[in-house]
Image (cartoon, rainbow, N blue to C red; front, side, top):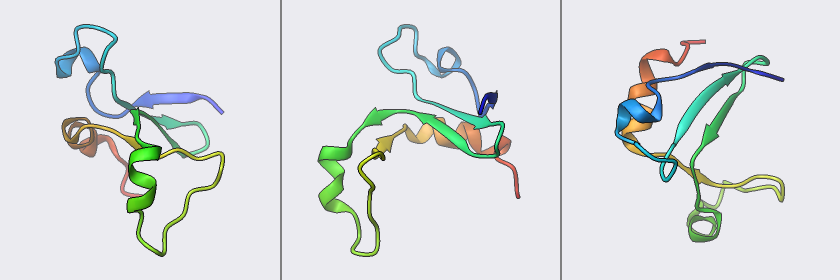
Amino acid sequence: MKIIRRLGRPPRERGSMSGDTCPDIFELSDGSFAVVGTDATEALESELPADAARADHERIVVVSRETLIRAKADIPEE
């Protein structure tokens, strides 16, 4: 599995001038997506709806609204 491309604009273009806040979204060679964001598992796990779950190897990750909106145009339809 490899990173194929970034979706949206690089963090620097979204105002991150340091390594302090660098949310990012990448498309992977197998068609999946990888997200760099803030780990909010402990804060949000109890907020998951009853029909949602998280496996031990999964984390709940938060990315900024701006990051996702800027990636929208790059997300494939299928």
